[in-house]
Amino acid sequence: MLEANVVKRIKAAMEKIDFSGTVIVQNPNNIVVEKSYGFANRSEHLENKVDTRFGIASGCKLFTSIAICQLVERGKLSFESKLQDCLDISLPHFDQSISIHHLLTHTSGIPDYFDEEVMDDFEELWIKYPMYTIRRLEDFLPLFQQNAMKLQVGERFHYNNAGYILLGLIVEQASNLRFSDYIQEHIFNKTGMNQSGYFEFDALPQNTALGYMDFPDGSWKTNIYSLPVKGGSDGGAYTTVKDMIKLWDALIGNQLLAEEYTKKLFTPHVNKDEQNSYYGYGVWIERNHDNINKYHVMGYDPGVSFHSAFYPESAYKLVVCSNKSEGAYDIMKEIEHEIIIVNG
Image 1: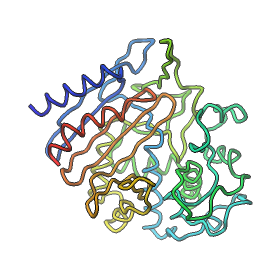
Image 2: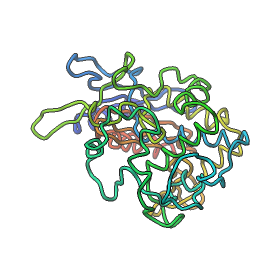
Image 3: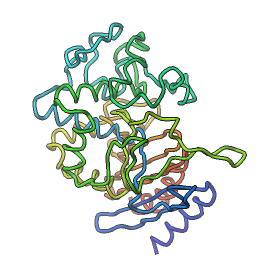
């Protein structure tokens, strides 16, 4: 009965917003809902399926944070390590007191290459720096490394993609591995996320959804000229809903990090303006007084919308992947109303 109610709500929401993507909801014992809608490839009428790979944009900042915590656990870094001591690159205008903790919590004050407070159109970035040239983390540096500080270090939360690019470069320098290779070896392989990876637009594997941008006149285009050809440590990996469930299971079960560092990652380190919204290390945290209601990650890019969450009180896990610019949030809210609130 519960599954029928959820599917009914999802279907109604899907029809209202013309959702395209895949949804999974799992409780501690079994999968409650597993549904797909829309097309992974509209031109060929290839439908989205439960094993379809989707881009998750900033949802994979969590991967970067896990990598940093692993390196701290292994003694290669500390959360107090200074940026200037971790990277052999020129950042002439950045404050020397910036630490890894500041970068993880978006409190470093550095300039972002895509500042959501002043920019609306992500595609503006690629006029000067064509997206097809962005394949490695160092390719992102010209977008921000010569700019002045935006804020004082620790002044406030300011969501920052550039900070996570720097964290990825720190992972590379500390591990002597390319960032995507590190994530593959130490996160994807370790958790059995066999369908996940940092794929390139011009070499996508099978079962990968194209991202779509819809326009008011009914026309559409894919996002292949809207994003870097390969994602970085700030976003752009591909995964499936089942692989994302595996990540939550491994993280909660302390399989990727010792319990001390899992707790550190899940600690509400900084408040994000809104009363109950906090940020840990790469993860959003919804807190009500001393109780944690939800740990969640999200991602938005042109042609991508993604939400995934773990609800500690009910132990439910949710993943919503969409290959459209909007829709994942609406579906998540429908599911939360029917399952999480009822069972929480």
